[in-house]
Every structure is written in structure tokens, then in C-alpha cells.
Image (cartoon, rainbow, N blue to C red):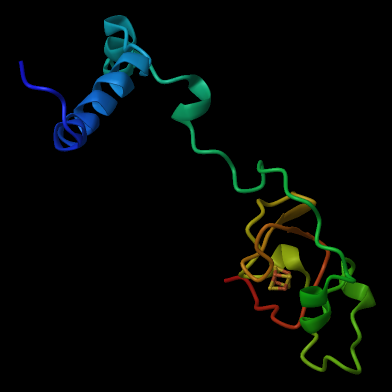
Length: 132
Ligand code: SF4
């Protein structure tokens, strides 16, 4: 009988590690595999309709937010600094801005200038552009 050598030990160690790893790995049940590959018969009602852009609950943009200050955002258009922002148009507000993502009648909605926040429908900023 041949005595084990260091070379033989080095040869079998990776295979022994694989066998040990396979033995310790969690077993995959055939039923769980089938559930993962079988599509649901009917999508849930919530997934059938696309959610409204305003249905997403986002925090309101604060007028003290650094980016809000840059754009002269106010949450009440009548409070806009008309001296500093000469492009202010009487009657303009987020609700009638082309960038406002809320629906008619929403009190707040998204704006691509302030990602992750909602702006007030009656708010305003220097990037206001008349909705077509
Ligand atoms: Fe409001 Fe339009 Fe300014 Fe966005 S870009 S904050 S919707 S006025």
C-alpha cells in the first residue's frame, strides 16, 4: 500500500472541499422549483392597472431645500419673488406647468426637476412652462 504524500493531499483537497460544500448546501425541493417556473393564472388586480404617477407617496419638496432655492421654488405661486424672477407670469403655478406630473385636481405631483419629491399644485418655480 502506498503511503499518502503531501502531493496526494494537495491533489484531493479541492475535491474534498467540493464534496463538503455540496453536503452543506440547502436542498432544492422539486415543488418550489415548479412554483417558481409556473406563471400565476391571473395577475393581481393592482398589477393589471398602471399606478397613477401621483399615487406614489413622496415627501413634499420643502422651500428651504437647496435645489428648491436654486429654482426659486415656492409652494404658493402668489408668494414668488416677482422682482427677482421677472419671468413670473400671473396665474402660473405647478398645476398648469408642462412639467407637472400630477393629474387635474391633485394638490401635489411629481416634477422632473425635483426627483423623489412632490411639488405643490399651487407652487411655482423659475422653470415654469405653460402646459399646452
Ligand atoms: Fe412646478 Fe413646473 Fe417648476 Fe416643476 S418646473 S416646480 S411643475 S413650476
